[in-house]
Amino acid sequence: MTAKCSFGFCFKGSRTYVHGTDIYTQLTEYFGSGIKKIDLAFHGITVKNLSFYETKTDDMDIKVTFRCQLENGKRIKLFGIENNTNVNCRYEYMEEEIVRHSSVDRTTERISLITQTEYNFIEHIVAMNKALLENLYPDLNGKWYFTRLQLPYPAAMENINSLILEFKSNFQFKLTKTAIFVNNENLGYIYFSLIPKES
Image (cartoon, rainbow, N blue to C red; front, top):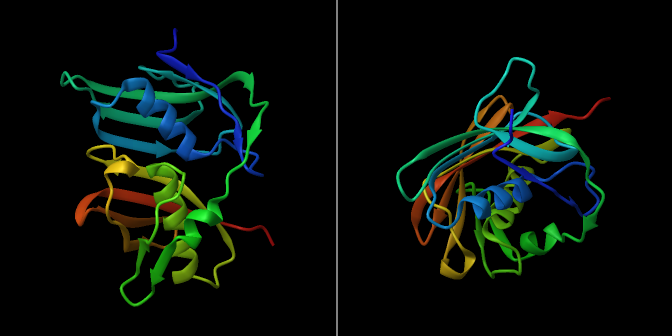
């Protein structure tokens, strides 16, 4: 079976897994600016490079599912699995820079971007949502992971005057849902899961 597309990655900062923001970026760049109705879901930690297939088999260890609609109306569904190529590079990522340029309001359960940084849209919303959850639930012993994104249209930071995330719901910390507001319009939802630390 031939892969629809394959991507090579570098680890972000000190991480030892492929970051969801980079997977999103590679996929959206591959399909181009006309895509919409994005639904990206992560099913496990990825430590190798990824290949994406249009069909799945029973023996696939699926790490990522990606759905979107192309500019011509065609709907795409892909299944991402680790291939046999290792990630052998790393680059600097100062997530705290985004957090420093944001403000959390625990009363409204919102985080707002005060000043844009050099990072892209997906990096902003993932860092901001993690900071929001850590502020709302400071006593939890675990690590937050980006697990899903529902986005009718991709966004670019150069078109954003206002970026606000608002916490919506928590399903026993197995899945949290946060609304994304761009220029005061609800653009979609981002989901995180808490993985408890081993005692």
